[in-house]
Length: 311
Image (cartoon, rainbow, N blue to C red; front, top):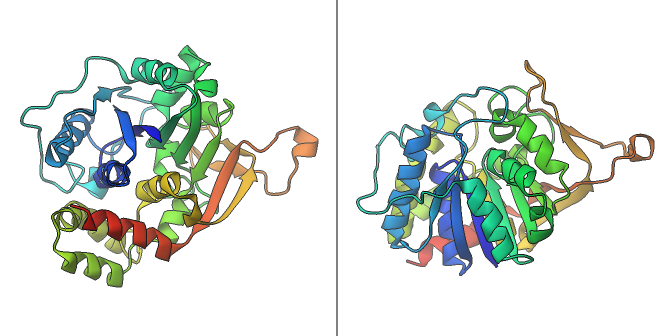
């Protein structure tokens, strides 16, 4: 399996990269897009993480610094100023590519046509722009895994919208309707399967290089999630999506659905509209995504822990 990881670097994006690598998947490029924290810091934090992992062979391509149409806000209060808490990290040697992410996506989709998987764990601006510039990527990219949206209207940036789709709803609408083979993991799946105290404490006591790294980069996020979002622990929206890309048996329930995105400003910006009533016979919309409704928490934790064991 050959992957592009499209991300807005914070702790879950970094660990998604680690999980792919530790499960022997090839990453041919990491593309950065606007999102969680200051854009330049996102680039620096990813390069810092690659140095930590000893992977100077994976190119990092900076992409869009803003959504297609609207303004947006970063969420340093959620992830910390450095994306791994408030520590500001910088690479000592690694530098980002001068090639723009959109051009890299297009070139890599041609080079690995038919085998390239696209892990979209961020706002979808880069992929939407690549598609608009070069529609053939729909044929070239084997599968797109998207972390974004909601199934029951429980948002994390507004009462109804998930952050990635809220940041760039126009891009999300373009990508979902472009014709890609898509598996979509919504926010509520991460909420239902947040890391509970037993799992957190088990990881804390593992005392491997990667388990200690995990505790370090997730502590800020866990604290925010439990205190401010009233969750049972730190959620893994990106890492759950990555786990599914590695092993589909983690999925407990998924349906093919027609999904669209609300692009208006106001309370409904970024809201997901799902054709639950199968009204496609009236509005002629066919299912466009495989929508994940739940996962097997035990299987997910197993792949997580096994990743942390493999220093």
